[in-house]
Amino acid sequence: MNISGGSFTWSNKRVDGDCVQEKLDRCFFNSEWSSRFPYAQGLALPAIQSDHNPIIIRLLDEGNKRKPSFKFETKWLEDDECDEVIKRAWTRGNNERYLPTFRQCISNTRKNLKEWNKVKFGNPKKQLDSIARQITELQSKTLTNETKVELQSLEEKMDKLLVMEERKFQLIDVMKPLN
Image (cartoon, rainbow, N blue to C red; front, side, top):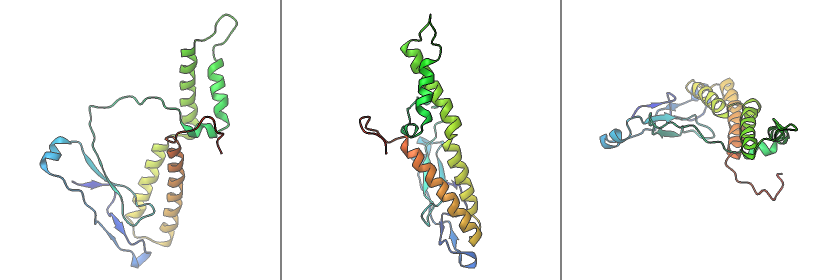
């Protein structure tokens, strides 16, 4: 299986003439596996905090795309604007003759939070992909002091985004205040 995502999968991370970069890591499969997963792709991710690029296999199924369900993200609770976004959703459409139903309020909340999230936090997946492409591009070049500093900066940005994304999946105890 060909692996996309970079020219090398290992580097000794030394600078200039002492830098060694090799394509050491591989993916292997047989014909049975290949026929079972015809859309599979190998992808070398950027080497972050390591001298090896992790390799993942994506088992793509072109016909199995569905709309993602709405999930409340824990990171929103850490932002002061979140309360106001929810309050606006519950008061939208209220007047003396008409009160929205519970279902309409929930729908408004979902819509408001999705819009607010897009504006406030952007698309972390696209940001992570962009940073990963930049890191991969830099890692395919000979490492200099300048590129090493740039790589460290990109890795720090990626770490911050990954921590923020990790918050999405953390369960919260609603009885405890967030620290």
